[in-house]
Image (cartoon, rainbow, N blue to C red; front, side, top):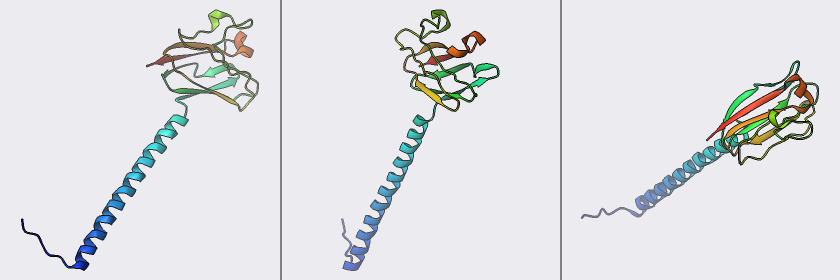
Length: 148
């Protein structure tokens, strides 16, 4: 193998170009990774579905949704009265009005003033039935079907 003889200045210039190329590649990879992380965090921060709570008539919109395990649903009170979202049976809530799949914990937003919201991330697949306690007599019910 024949080796070329290069002048000192040419060798320095080639070394500079190699260094610049490595820096360019490193910066480019850094930008790509940062963009991917940003997009992933943005996707994780955004709810999969937003359900609004209205007053006239009192209802969840939409009242039946689907989500995947790990996705978050956000309920927003867009009305002018208090609302809530609960899957917890109790003295006011009859057990046949609400349901969670086996292994899932019930959730309850508490009362949400107008403009407030509640989010829940689903970790167990199955069907979740929920109601708004202040408007249960008006039939304000909803359902989330969660799949793997």
